[in-house]
Every structure is written in structure tokens, then in C-alpha cells.
Amino acid sequence: MTALATLVATLLRFRTRGCVVLACIAAMLCTSVNASALERVQTKTRVWDFSSAAPLNTWLERSATPRTHPENPLARSEPASASPHAARAAPKAIDPNKLHHIFGQAKHKLGPLLEKFGGSQEAAFRAVESATQTAARNQGLTGVFKTTVEVGGQNVVVKGTVIDGTARIGSFWIP
Amino acid sequence: MEGLEDLERGVLDKLLAGEHPVLAALREQAQRGRLLSRERTGVGFYCSFEVPREVPIVEPRNFEIDDVNGELQGLAHGAGFVLFVRDGRLDTLEGFSYDEPWPPVVNEFKLTYQREPRELKLPDPSGVSPS
Image (cartoon, rainbow over all chains, first blue to last red; front, top):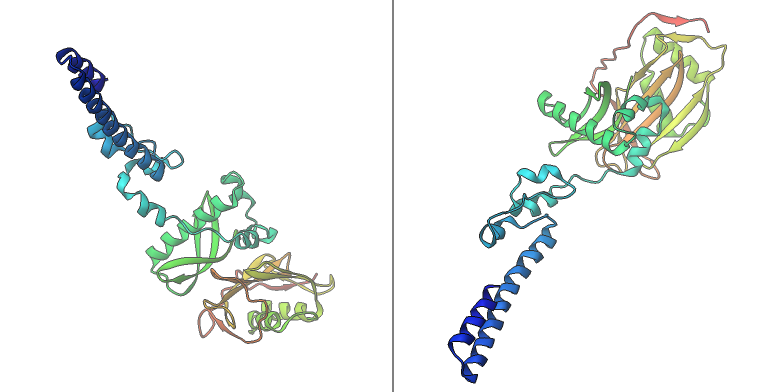
């Protein structure tokens, strides 16, 4: 809109043909610059997959939208520039064989635990893994260990080992 | 017990070693029982047992023995084992790895207790009951 107004004003002020041509070129350049700026914002939005690119928005327009990842509400407190690191620190995928090994065994009596996590083996495993990591850190566990953690109101016995400071789960069950 | 592989037999023997009357009774069950099934999960195994009804059961009836660890050929971080006793009888032997696939073949292994000398704490030393 600003470019169009500039063009009209220029046309009214200078009525010679040469000036009209120059004014048209100036208007096209102005539009091009604006489009490039917008394109950079959109590109960044797609790359990071955030709902907005706040750092650029703060000077393009004052009403910056929250930097919220559509599938990760916890990312609210993270600066947009930290998103690549967050992606690198994503939790390691759980071996489906491990899930089957642990949850496919009736002797482990993990039904009540699974219920607490809506039947999601992965969510239940992550919760036990997190609780075990905390226990290992608090208790100073090293090497092969056996510990009991409370998850979802259930006491879960965990057998694991600490590798490079991280507790790795071998198996767990409810006694 | 018939049908067990070397590693499984070695683990079972190590888990049931000791003078405790419950361990002695479980050893008798192991001698007279049989392997019912074996499942390989990719990260371990399960062996299910069947013990004849006439063999005396143990008290308490439900507990686990899990103080044996293994160094196995093909496993960088070793293996763990759990023996489930249910209804007073040997029920299931579980083996598992930590964060790596179970090797397809295990020819060499070394078994140790979690603590040496062994500190096995059975839930209740009340012993053996008639079946």
C-alpha cells in the first residue's frame, strides 16, 4: 500500500513520460524488497516449523505471535534459535523389541501401569526410564543395578545398568 | 532340566545355588521339571517351566531371584536374568540385554553374582510346603 501511494504521488507531481517510467521502476523495486523480506520470514517459519518467526516479526510488525511448536507445547519457553539443539537432543527411539520384551510378558504384571498411560507402552516406558534416571542420579548408582521406582502409583522393580552416566533399562516388572 | 541351552542351564544353576531350604526345594523342582516353551524377543529370552504337581512347592509362593549377571560374547554391556517363582513353583527364566540386541548365538559366557560373596535376600525363609 505504501508503494502504491508513493507511485501515485510521484505521477501527480511529475507528469512527463520519463518520470512515469522512473516512478514505475521505483515502485517495482519497492514491492520486490518487501516480497523478499516476507519470503525470508516464511522460509524460516517452514524450516523451524514454528507457528511464527518472532525475531523478525518484532521489527516487521509489533504483534508477534507466541513461538509455539504445534506438537510441542513445552517449547513455549524456548527461544526460536534453540530449536535446532532441541531437535538434536530428542530422546532416542525405543527399540520395539524392548517394548515387546517387557510389556508382552504377563509375569511382569504391568497392566495397571499401562492403564495409567492410556495403554501406551512407549509412554509407560518413558516414565519408568525417567524415574529410573532420577533414582540413579539421586542414589549414585553405577554399573548394573536394581532399584524400585514409583510410577503412576505403582512400585516398579527395574533392572538396568549405567552407561556413560545414563541409566539403561534391561527389564522391569511389578512384583 | 531337559531342553535348556548351556547359558540357560548355567544361569538356572547359579540362581539356585546355595544352602537355603527354598533354594534346595527349587533345585529339586528344576531336576524334575521340564522346559515348556522358549521365546526369543530380540533383546533377550523367556523360558517357561512346568513342574509336576507332586513336587513340593516353596513358601513364599511368589517372588523373584535376580542377582545373577552375565558377560556374554556379543554383548558389550552384559546381560541380566530374573527367575520368577509363581504359586510355589519355578515358572519363568528371563534373560535380557541392556540397550543392544541379544546375540543370535552365545557360545561363551561368564556369570557372576551382583555382590560377591552372594547376598541373596529371599522374602521369607519359611521353607517348603507339601504340594
